[in-house]
Structure formats: structure tokens, C-alpha cells
Image 1 (spheres, one colour):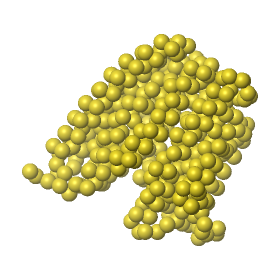
Image 2 (cartoon, one colour; image 1 turned 135 degrees about the vertical axis):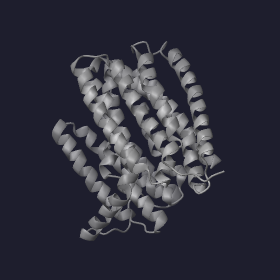
Image 3 (cartoon, one colour; image 1 turned 90 degrees about the horizontal axis):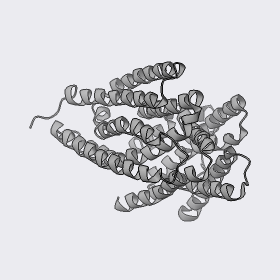
Image 4 (cartoon, helix red, strand yellow; image 1 turned 30 degrees about the horizontal axis):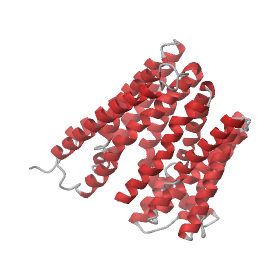
Length: 389
């Protein structure tokens, strides 16, 4: 476990370098659009409707390996999504990123369930490394015509190299060996979706929540898109830091689900909130130092506070939210999140049409997400029975 955590921190260093260096070498107006495209591509795996989680569920609970059916179903699903995107936008360069981003989720689950955890997590660092290298080349030589093409090349090289590394180190291929290329295989893929959709619905909704703010800023406040993108990227350091406790809590809650007490959850929440406050303060100080170098971005600190404070508290609450899944309260939480997402979209449109500050728009969205966290606390503290001390 220690080796895995160390390796995860090490590989996340490449992602951190990408986050910090790209705003310095890409023109500020292009940076926002580039980050928007990256965010749009990252939504594509959710078109698989949680089938990759269904694969994990059946692998662990029934010892059935449907990797071939999962890979094939994900491949065709991603082809449909990529084709629709190209047809609607005319941007052919994102075809490969959409397909490979979707398949990366599938391959990662296969490697994880085969206990190859280290190699399973290197795709994203590889992607960051190639993206950074290509952007540095473009910064020095103006070699590439567009940043869409950079994203295309980065995804292509990252996925191919990931496959080569897997083959050389594990003597296995990321491509499936056996699968049913028929109606039976399609039925199996649908069963994977059935098992995994509810597991992923909250993650899908939260991803859409974040992308919604980015979308409204791009369409109605495009001049602020780069500053928001930089602020959100820095905010991710805060979210990732808090989520470290979430990973540990997920395991501990599951192991002690029959004996866990409300006071145990309360203590875990206090630790998460304390960690959040420390990381938030450190990140804010470092951000202000960083902005002395990245001088072409305005209002980044305001966007950072608007997007990180309430969302950071939400993620702190999320460290104990797995109890909702174990105690069969996840559906109520999900329905509330759907309602909040609808309210957020409606109010964001109102803000945009009336030219209300994009900072206030982000602040409003973050506050609404926090309401979901508060509702989860209500379920945890008042709607779940715990053993008596």
C-alpha cells in the first residue's frame, strides 16, 4: 500500500507539472479553450454508463471476467460518441482522444482487478508528460497548427506507450484475447451497464456539474475562461489532497460497517475538514506566489476561492459518504444531486443572460454542491441506525 501511494504521488507530479507550466507557455486566450477541450474529452468515458464498474463488480463478486465484452462494447460506444462529436463540431482531431480516453478507463479496471496497480495508473501521467512536451515544442518552434492536434498526438502516444509498457512488463496485452462478437456479447455488455450504472451515477453527475460551469463561462464569459480554468486546475490540488482520506475511509468504513459508530464518522469528518483547511491555506498562498509569474491571468484568486472553498468542504464530507452506499441510502443522495444539478443549470443560465459576474456564477454553483454534502450529512446523522455504545 505504501509503495502504491508513493508511486501515485510520484506520477501525480507529472500532472502537477502540466498544470503549472502550461499556463506559462500557452497564450492565455488559447489556454482556456485548450482546457475546455480536455475537459470535454474527459466526459467521454461516462458514455459507457458505468460498464467498467459493472465489470469490476462481477469480477470480485462472481469471479466472472467479461473483459473482452467490456472492451468491445466500450470501443463501439466510444466510436459512436466520437463520430457524433466530429459530425456536430467538424473537429476530427478529437476523435482519437475520445476513443482512447474511454478505453483507458476499461484498461485501468482490467489491470487493477489483475493486481497490477502500478501500471494501471500510469496512463494519466503519460498523457500529462506528452501534452507538456508537445506544448513546449510548440512554444519553442511553433510547430503544430492547433492545440486540438496536440491533444490528438498526446492521447495517441500515451495509449500506445501504455500498451507497450504493459506488454513488456507483464507479458500481457491490453487488447482482449477472447470475447463474444455476437448478440450474446451485447447482452453481456448490457449486464455490465446494469451492474455499474448506479455505482457511477454520482460521479457522472458531479463531473457534469463541474463541466456545466466551464460551459457557461466559455459561451457567455469567454474572456474569463482561461482564468477560471487555471483556478480550477489549482483547486484540484486541494480536492486530491482531501480525497486521500476518502480513499482510506472507504476501506475502513467497509471493513467495520457492522460495528462503526456515529462518533467514529464524526471524528473522521473533523480530520478531513482540518486537512482541507490546511491544504486550502497552503494552496492559496502558493497560488498568489505563482501569479507573480503567470501575470496574464486576472481574477484567478477570486475564481480559486469561489470554486475551492465550498467544493473542498463537500469533498471533506464525501470522505464519510461511503456509509450511504453500505447502508442503502445512496439513491436518496443521488436524487437530491440530480435536483441540485437541474437548479444549477437553470440559475447559471439566468446569471449568464443577465450578465452577472462569472465569479458569482461559480460561487453559486459551489454553494449548491455544498448543499448536496449537507443533505448527505443529514442522511448520515439522522437516517441511519448505528450500534449503541
